Image (cartoon, rainbow, N blue to C red; front, side, top):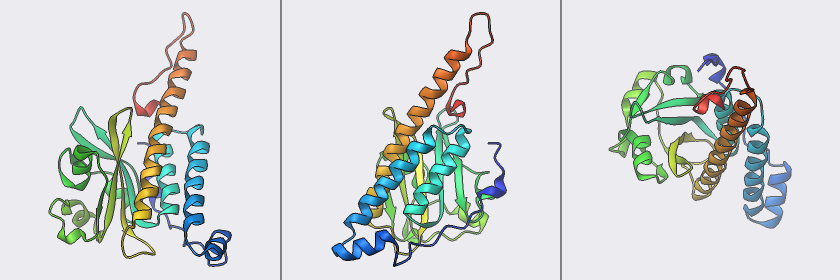
Amino acid sequence: MSEDKDSNQVLLEPPPANDSPTSTLSGLFGDDSLAFVTAKLSIADALLRLVTRDCKFGEFAREALLLVMRVVKAEAGSILEVNHAASNLFFRAVVGQSSDRVLNFVIPLGQGIVGHVVESRQPLVVANVEESKIHLRAIQDAVGFETKNLVAIPVIVRGQVYGVLELLNRVGESNFTPSDLELLNYFCELFAKAIEARLMIAWQKGQRGQAPGGADSSQSGSEAA
């Protein structure tokens, strides 16, 4: 990735104020149903606008990560991508503390929580990381970040596991809730479709670039998107 690593250090915006439209209407109805629907619409709208943006895939992934972390707030988050040739996962996008150092790590398939999620193809919520037997502590120890709780969800593109969305340390709640999990599953489903759309757009651009007698300007893989 050619992105400026310092730009990965961000301050997450605070939760909505109590007098925000979403908070006021939710209080009027006496439950969180309106806020939940609004959050889903926000995710869909933001991804729709993002998918057609002219940017590198790494920037696209990081912007997608930022948008979901504005809905489900956490101290840190990452999108890991499976490298099938090397049988590992690498960090495609990272947001939060020590993100510049996290980018240097890879995780072998089958190891750690994200490796487990890739194999099981099922989301996993860990309420107390210290009690998890499959959590890899080497990375958090190396970068000096204490993980208390986390959620990891597979991103499945065309029937294959593309990677994993992982959020660490829920902000505003003691742990990740069932509503959080539903929203994150919804995000991952739309994110997978957005990846497909970008691949299709890249393929169409490549086809247009293959004029008779001209150079082939197409690229392969997710970097082409």
